[in-house]
Image (cartoon, rainbow, N blue to C red):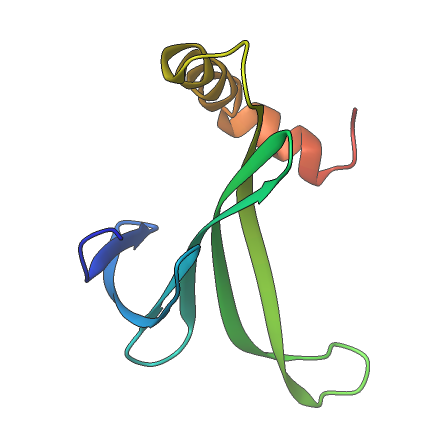
Length: 116
């Protein structure tokens, strides 16, 4: 388990997320107002292990067509899907670093514009 609280910074604003649930394969952290949720989990299925870090944010937004306020959630997550053998931790870390390097503002905006 990671140390609680986890500090999440969005647009230069840091928010502490505290451990709210935990079991042998995952822990969920949540901000005091409930608008941020961070989860780290691990799932082994025979010959592979999937490790996930996920950040969700909830906002109350006004529907531009109906003017009705509703709760909306957006999530961003990374999954590391690794076989039992063939890759050591350093090799996996190199892949993660390569993806982080590619995720520039320009490339993220291209994705958000549905370019591929």
